[in-house]
Image: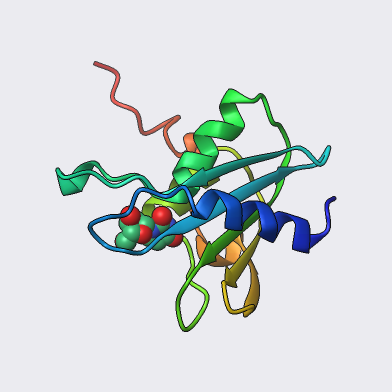
Length: 137
Ligand code: THU
């Protein structure tokens, strides 16, 4: 595991590259795997607002593309009065790839809040729920 400060530094660097001209709310995210490798993501907005992608889901794509397995920790960095937790869509996407994940929410002013995916998304919907209920046709 890397030092949290190192992960926050990486989140800060990628947050600088966010494309958020519409909301002005830049987000940096880092996924750390059990071998210490990391993947980063920033939010990418679009003039067609609905096409925007959150930093967390960008990090998920980067982690998959880099072949990271056994994701252990997610760091999310924002500039806000309080740390912010990933949106519901990002929670569900994260849950596709990890049973459990430590989630560290950080602000640029240094506030930190530690939670977990299971706390953020209890009673999740997953692949196992599709089995018997899937339509046969
Ligand atoms: N956003 C993220 O990237 N992650 C979050 O956890 C919350 C929201 C982005 C989406 C959009 O680009 C901007 O922040 C404002 O919602």
